[in-house]
Length: 304
Image 1 (cartoon, rainbow, N blue to C red):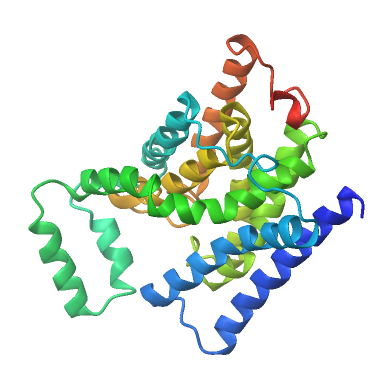
Image 2 (cartoon, helix red, strand yellow):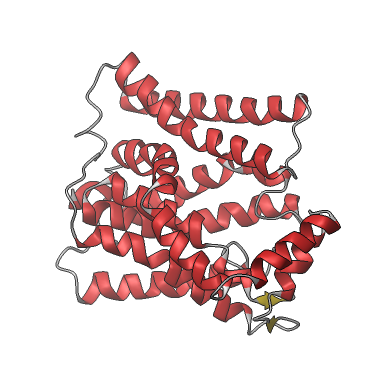
């Protein structure tokens, strides 16, 4: 088999299994509004790319995974960049959100309370308010600390489930492609893969159909950063930490704002797009004028 067929096989398996899992979830009465049900589906979904990589690389082609797919725990400074950058971008998205009409700073978290009122019973809402009032510090600081811890532990494990596919297998598959072109291709694949969850209400519960397009754009904007850190760190583990910390701290962008909707505010809204665009400009300046390796204008695998 040629390499392109191997890539096609991975993508076919990943999409068929992922979309089938989402379909079976709905067929058997799964309710995405349920926190437990949603979490089980989401975590299971994240491990499918890793499972498909193992099937293709180990079972079918009988090739080693560790070296070929950059599974390295050799820690360098880029691991710390991967760990720290997503909370910074989340705070940037929060700041950008405040520039939008109808969006205001809400330290008492009235906006978050309104969002939860649609999902929780009055008794659960009262319990949540009492719990927040009993906290010794503001919940946003607790969320930040918890996000940092989860980002390098349990969330990183789930993130690895995806990253072994997107920044491991696909980086290897497209390593001869121009970096920016590969970023668009991988980002598009990554975004489309989310479609069943988005249509159920993930990330964009108010606008699930538009949310599919938003998710594709968001993933395309995220991918150059993920690929860059993977290449610089020479490890997909760094990408898993970055992914885990992203998932753990994205909510910080909307905890203390009121107004807007899922298309405009937060990490996955327009505010997040703007924040990511600023970071990509800074990344381009760093790569062009500071870094010795000019990764962004080279083929994807040149820095490995």
